Amino acid sequence: MPSKTEIILGIDPGTVVLGYGLIKIENRKPALIEMGVLKLSTYKDANVRLQLIYNKVSELHRVFKPTMFAIEAPFFGKNVQSMLKLGRAQGVAIASAMQAGISATEYSPKKIKQSITGNGNATKEQVWKMLQQILTFKDEPEFLDATDAVAVALCHYYQTSTVLGDTAKYSGWDSFIKENANRIKKK
Image 1 (cartoon, rainbow, N blue to C red):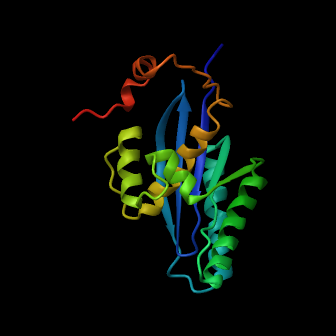
Image 2: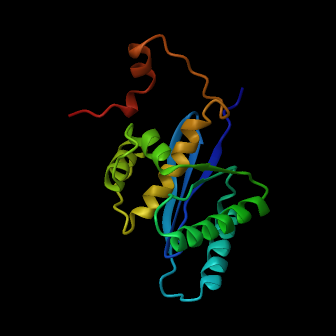
């Protein structure tokens, strides 16, 4: 049976900085394709920002043709206005995915951090460092929103790995380590 290749687009929504990350899954191995940010702080009109978000996410769909789409769910804070703005940014990104024919999956910030680092309370820097180990990249992003978006995509892979054909069963730690030697950090 030939290996299926999937491309996952992850989005860290924001109305000032929106992060995006794309990973490719081939032979059950994730690899970084691209990560970046859309800076929106120079645009004062909220509707212009939303249009730019829609355009950027649509462009990512056209260029990379992702087969899956994942987005970070809004963090429930105390500032209602910030929540509304973030929800709009998230909704526009989801609408773009739906327009491209891809359903969207949401993950809470805690779930994403837990999937990547094993700690739901990890810092953005800890997530970035773990992603560097898992995906073997050296780049230090200008904005951690980009690595947060990659974390969303990788979290989606981990949560749906059986969908992607990852049905490996391990008889114990020895068999897990043998199959995942690239994930072991040597000191």
